Length: 452
Figure 1 (cartoon, helix red, strand yellow):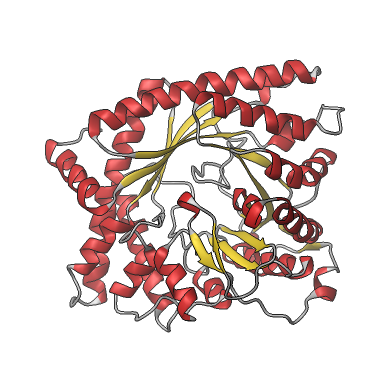
Figure 2 (tube, helix red, strand yellow):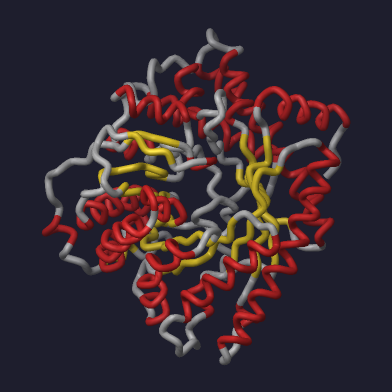
């Protein structure tokens, strides 16, 4: 694919003035051929594979940053779901040993995060899946860069409510072991998790992928915000067109970086994830875009419609620009990582119920939400079930990252630091779903799954 000088210069302008960046370059790595019956040999194989390719990724990404002047914020690795590669390990603490090996490897390689510590359990759990799930509190309280996921629901399989029940207790355990519950920021629960997602915490290298795959996550809320601000008086049809053309330009820029980086590393190029990923920077907020459209405060009536228009235009523009759009490719609405979302919570305009409604038209769900530390495990499980039901029934990806902050109550302030941002603890209904959640079993797949 050829790019003109004009396109490159336009990308430079977006970078200089509107916070455009490559949020992440994520190298997917197959680890199945590292398996060995001797766990020490197994760990050595993992360390060598991850470190060698991690160092290559960092070096190649830094060269491209220097060449184009476009910031690449995170260099990340995603790997084969760990539950799949520990099946033959007899050691009860094998998952923890593997997690610490991966953490050590990416730290030595200069990689920011590694994803894939997780399992696909939408229809049931193997012995290895159960061991991995039980290890989650220890792993997320004793490692720095390991991120994990569980896919507990899908449109085809339904929802594994037995796994959902366990997760409420596990999320509380992770929170209680880490300062301000920050360990929970490294763990996401999904319905219909995509296998080529470059974003953490839910990234993993799927079983249908090649040995290596280079995926790009771009970020352009500031760029989209600038064009919405310049078009305050046009109707919604025209506004959609403006956003669509902007998304086209952003996606082209992301693919330029991705393809060249993959070529330089001699690995296959995967996808461009066109999600609008917010940051804590002023002007880099998805909520800010919605408010510029004419909604007084994110969460007010009209917010869902505005967000639906925004994500539809972004997807259309991205699909026009590239045949390799994939991953999540939605509009992220993480409360703590988006200054506008956080302000809306503080003002009382945005509740968890409204957030749930917003996720029906965008991705990726209830993300980076602080809740009271005394929220019961069953209520956490119920919130997860509610959100993943939206994804399961509507054949879309939804996810949950809840942070029950120990010692904090509704309205209290909490600062997670860095890109994780800051937020106010959201109020949660005190009415119980205890009896419903503890029924367990598997929620049947919706009739929409019968398409063959």
